[in-house]
Image (cartoon, rainbow, N blue to C red):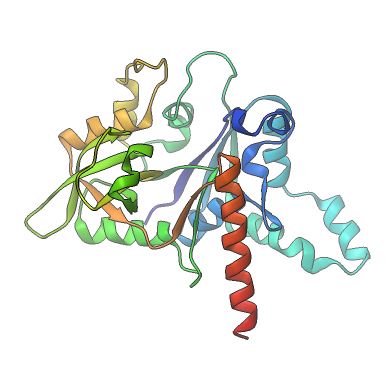
Length: 284
């Protein structure tokens, strides 16, 4: 069982500027729920009960902290007007998980590995899920890809597991590609992570979608991580280093992957969510 998750929501949201200056991109709505809440719900469905949200400083971080903190005055205000059902979704989050808020400084180290570095004391040697709060997996059947990832890691008996999206090989140059090998049981194991390859000859490619199940000793690889050529500390570098010493399962996901960190991806996610909602409504 995996009890902890670290969710990174400290990005600048520069691709959403100028609105990104005042609205955290992870708080942009997918229909009437912020992107990050759907990531939190996926963690809870996987059995997670302790969630660290690594936020930006200032207003952007305050938005996330306020959303995931209990507001008894607002709950009472809604109850007085008979709107309890509107608040129940938030109340359910508070009942299911304990939230820890960690602030990532605006200046200093930057990159996808930094949230896990900041959360090292929270991790405290335990297995944990590491994911980005602005990516989304939508499943019409209501299942949880993170729950599937936890189950797949347990069955494979590997030290870690990384979720993989699947795209046509012709689109591979847009993503970080997961190259794999097979073990004696047929499990797909991580060989390397290739960032935006110029060519990918296979008809399909497995891509990194920033959802990983890691053991507590992964923190040692974060401690040893060096700054990449682009000036960032990259989680993929630490994961690739870990995979050179341990078996890391690559598990293709079922859900539709949407990168909500850009306007096109966010709009596509809303359209897909609306279609799923409409289909569910028409089937009742």
